[in-house]
Length: 479
Image (cartoon, rainbow, N blue to C red; front, side, top):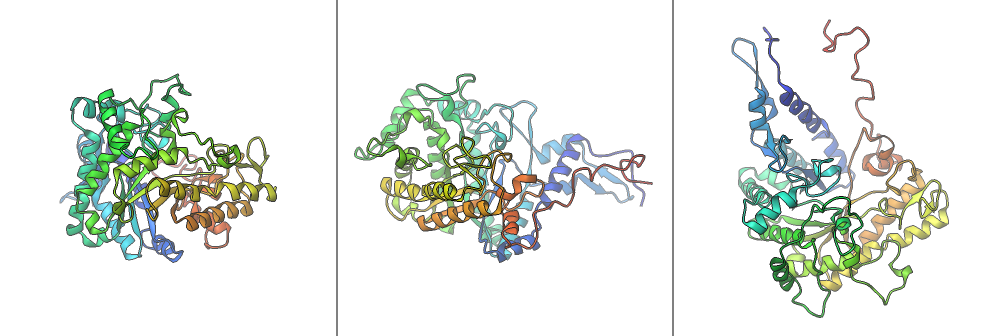
């Protein structure tokens, strides 16, 4: 075969090739899904971006009849395998091939696993932080997308993305029944406007930047609050910037409700995060002591979410397909942390078994507080989840407890408390082979290895420096 070495993929083509290689090789669709199934894992949450394509990276390089390679131009790669961010000039997202997702869903179905598809990112970024997809750029989804659409009648990019994806899932049910069998639920947005509460409210904690979550107009806010707060003898949803998120999620519930998916047995997992709310507007519990509200057990944000959930969904929906999802970590915040050096860095020292047991006994009560608060606002028996948790005791790995006894305690006590409260838990990630010291508390595969459950550690195929050619060797390894 004659190989045409005068051409090659351009920068975009090479980037897409690398990204797809990572996606395709991150998990083995047969052996690793089989191992997960044998561990008793039935449900997984799959984070995905908003950017999808009917093309495939394999199309970038083709062999011609004369034996030469034909390389897709960067212009064609951008058109077929990327999505242009409508809110940031010059920012393109790598597209996920729909055929790749279907193959993954079929593999999951084969191994008795079903998937929650989590719409983890949207154009412009819905939050600040690394998971937004545009970080360190400032989030623009709400300011540049939702404000023009909701307030001024412009094209609604965010809602249209969700509608189109729901429509595709409906089509999948008949086009590829086996792939659809691997689908369990849809999560419309991950941690919407996470950390926006720091920039909002009467006395915001942060005044160095303009908020990325603007208020609704006074007229819209008044109308929406009257819809939310019909039950005068129950918790009232307060006014504020968070109403923009609540309104978007209300519309997301409507899109799902009016689709075929509920009748086909698919659930909607609606995620909210306490940090969207400024602390200053939350309900106060004067009848409870400081001790009762400590250790992550303050129900103030949960009661607001419950009041919103009560008006957004029906009792029957909350017991069948509408699942409220609140993420919860001991590693973030100072009320439940543990550290190798103990207080004040952490609430307990890793080696102090008595203090550790006391803190964990109190902190793991969060699951029952979550259940009790939502049932008080709605009704008993509603479906609840916490789709992100870990065994980490501190957000800094330099301070976090990494000894097996502490990891076993934080993992086991959270699971037992959630099981008792009937709150479904999802571990943060199954594997992170290049996560270094973070693996002990954040990789489920590695933690299970440390606990003697899994037979292999969560190690990567390569190690730092493996990609570097020896001195004098050509970069392409040719002789």
